[in-house]
Image (cartoon, rainbow, N blue to C red; front, top):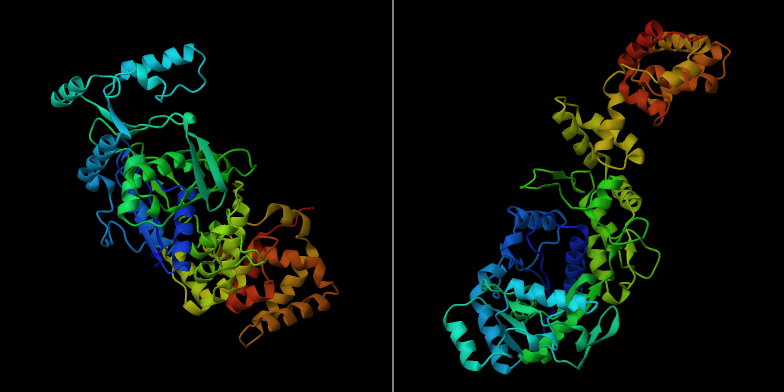
Length: 512
């Protein structure tokens, strides 16, 4: 009988969640939901020296913002808890000792000074990658080189030790990766990794394998940086006797810098001025604030859609997918092996598409919220009109306010370049006539009536409307370009339009 698909996202609470980690969480979520399985979250906090307060809450909030919350987690436990490795600490030693008993691991008593000396000797002998391995362990202080009674005495005295895995000297380790196909590694390239540290906490390698087994994980979908560790993990499954339930592995391609040269980093994001974290993150130690996609105005569904294409494609020309549609279309087989360039302009494009797909009423809420922050209010209907007019020009919700505020407040400054080039006697004549016609117009101003009156004003002055149109925009909005001006006039309303034209006629000077 086939097992239920169970996948896990296993971040460490060492700071903000990098976009690469968010993508890993998303791909795990999509795979689980496509297969009708479960998506778990496990906090891997075995390295307490790197623990950062607030990091776990940040992970939770980020996944909730994107609507990909796990089925089982520390805050939503199932039957396989605890879901923090630090709370599972008592169980790991028994598994490490089991490997020692089976001859697949051993005690090592080497001090840090002795380890440094070993590396220095190997470096002096021109060994490219100094390691504690099948050869060097024979010259070190461990339970493979020391007499049995001495090992027992050292353990009984409470002398610090670690437990290392015993990697075979000549063995080919094979792994069938779901993305990369068969990966083969010779064991003589591997070192005897520490499984249990001297503080009694397991390393990632041991805790990861034990937890995945006990949590019945069927597929491990994780970043490419873990591929070098995969052969060790395959060996550990073999040594524990868990080969029949070993999960399938899929190692995701790297996220690359915008130019494609190297792995995307926080430094690259800061250099180019784009986010690399889902949410704003304030470092509790330094106090530094790093911007997040959410606070920069990215919509969660747009961000998810963008993220899904960083390594995966649906096999056709579609680019816009809802979360449900992503679940339906997703397959690990369509994830590429090669790294993917990070393109912030594509992220902006997605945001624009999702923004424009929203109703004017939905967008009006963003505009009204921004206005409230500034201490102003506007009627919902008018806010919807402004949002509808501005959304084709907006990348972020905040642009509706930034770029559309001229419809709510008269200009106090005027574009100097347009003023020098376009503000002339012809413009003054047309606007003076237009103001008069508006004052004698006793109906509600629409875009059609606003245009008709302006055309009449230009014709009566024997001036082509196109010659003064930019000056008309300048006088009424302060800038020389923008959305359909007649629609703007209808939103502004007749009385406000008359006031703005009157102000411009009185205060703007023709530059000879």
